[in-house]
Amino acid sequence: MRLSPLQQAYSRYVQHTIKCDTCRNVDHGNCATSEELWRVYQAVGAAAYRQLAEDA
Ligand SMILES: [Zn+2]
Image (cartoon, rainbow, N blue to C red):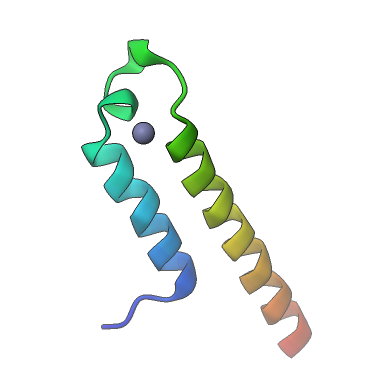
């Protein structure tokens, strides 16, 4: 099964948080990489939503 761009972006975010020491340790505070991956996911989601709106 092929993942959609949105699923791929979310998967990258999740995979990072699983492997990243900063993300796994709550006391470490914010992780810049995690925030960047989350922003990408949000951007892809917004683009996908616009695409749906245009098709409708
Ligand atoms: Zn991280």
